[in-house]
Amino acid sequence: MISPYITILRPAQWLKNLMLFFPPFLGGQLLQPGIAQKGIIAFLSFSLASSATYIFNDTIDREQDLHHTRKRERPIPSGKVTLRAAYLMAVLFLAAALFLGRHVSTTFLFILLAYLALSTSYTLKLKQFPIIDLFCISAGFLLRLQGGGTAFGITITEWLFLSVFFLSLFLSTGKRLCEQNTMGGSAGSHRKTLLAYPPGFLDGTLYLTGGTVLVTYTMYAIARQSLLYTVPLCCFGLLRYIFRVKSGFGGDPTESLLKDPLLFAVALLWVAMVGWGIYG
Image (cartoon, rainbow, N blue to C red; front, side, top):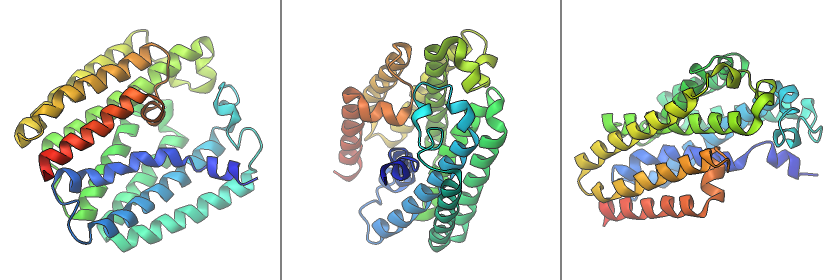
């Protein structure tokens, strides 16, 4: 069956790599000639690299995933994909990612290598340390943002950098909080850091980073003027995500976007409003 071999790549998570297009989209350059070609190569490069890291992560976490109600059904823990096949796929995807990354630019390749180093370190050790694990996830998004800026030759503004940093920290905190709440006493067998966070810490961090996202994005929108009316939409999206996490509906950012009609509608409306404000 080919389905498990597609599942192991986690193609839905490739949505995170759309962060590469933020610099040209917000910079008003997305429709310029040649941008699409650069974007496709950069996107494929990061997507293949991320799939390689997901496969590697699943091979390392296969024992812990057996204690998770959903992750135990993943191709590697369930035995649908052998370790040998998984390692082979990871190597092939990694080679393809580096090949494509080199064709974008040397600087982009270095950013891609930094992302791979971070992801590997996270899988092997860093995810075991509270707070550090959250910052590692956030750093992955920042590298995507910088990769997009490098690929398209666009400088990342201070307020955009801070907005993405706090947003990624907010989303990773929500995911951990949801895991901690839904798994209860068995959370430690799946992820040790879930027991290391004291009661209320992740809740407080979620509200803290959510409020900071709103402030930094508001400052970015004020600086751009045409984006000011997207701030209430941003506020609604943040509150909706918090509602999902606290209600136990799930904290995975990608799943929340794809499975929550309201969040999906907010995302589409944000893209439309920003597009109109910049290009209209």
